[in-house]
Image 1 (cartoon, helix red, strand yellow):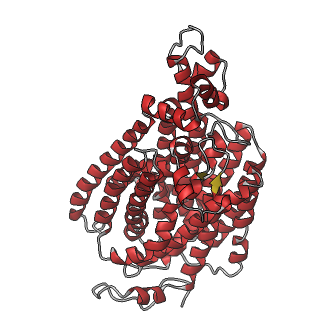
Image 2: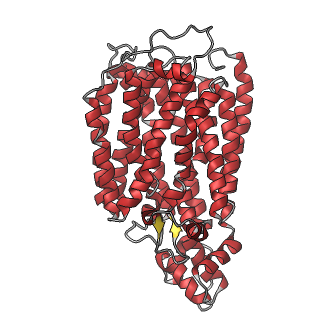
Image 3: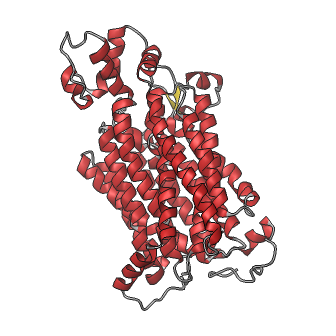
Length: 507
């Protein structure tokens, strides 16, 4: 094995090697970066899957109790920094070396987690998020650039599939760990993740620099100029815009579904039927009865990828990248409608399974696509570009979700609406329709709203939830995201047909 590009790779005209032959071809640098990414993702998803609850869930003890709109702003800023900054840092990683950039990122991420653990004001918490996002933005090009230099066209599909698989091992372990740490207090979640990401300092001791192939004499301004100039390709911009719509839809499983699950999904029957579930996986304080915590329910996504991605990547290795991504967008769009349509956890599980299939088709393939079309010496740069659709999609999605869920989906807000519209709680005082003014109009906070509605109606938590579900139909918010996914699907179908004219993009 070497620490640079794969040697003795089969010729371009040779058939693709077997899975195990391909694995043996992958160099030490590949496995080193996969391990570092796994630690980083373990910490990241440990925080990511519980943060929607910590930030905005109205009835969460010890939470920040920010509004859904404030949560949308935090997630939007996070996404833009984390995903758009690599457009610039990718070129710098190629120029100045992957190892140096990775070292800097570890410090930034630790500082971010520590601030998020200790700051409860909007500005203070947001600053911690900005540091974490900056660290992640610098981390990605160094890791992905090394991986791109460690694979070729014969090994790229299996290589990126293995990378995605190992990433999801970390992602699968993160939520249960966060749930356990949460039992000791919310701050422990962030302290624990800071400790985990610091393990990558140990990995750097054995990490040997991989040559990017870039011009090492270029000054910082030339790197920036090349970054801006290279992106002005109409075809590349088209792919970025189409994938932006897809990732806008996809990210709602991680950014919005935790709040939707906590408000509306009832897993009491599932918990009763499965006595083996550990207590640390359960929310015992829910008034509807013991519930499976959202981070463990939604972790089915990562579990599916850990179990099935490697064989799945081998099966689709001979499928062209663009048709595979198109199929993934189609399946993921259908999954959004299924997952959010019912209060049943079993229907949610079906939606998550479909979502996972769409992600396995699209996630690794999108990285493979940008790696394959990147010109020599610009792997890190192009793999920085790939974060643009994620950033645009996630940022816009966070704003849309903040408005939609904050006015038409959040149970606490709908409880306030019901009190104002359907009861005599305000003693005849008319409500002007401004959702933001409801707490002042009723003299009731979001944290108190659902309990107050129960008392007014004289009904239990499950019955009151059902009344709100039938009255306001909060599941309809998912139609907007499915429509965006459908638009991306149609665009990708057209682009796939057009790309057959372009040899450099028809992969």
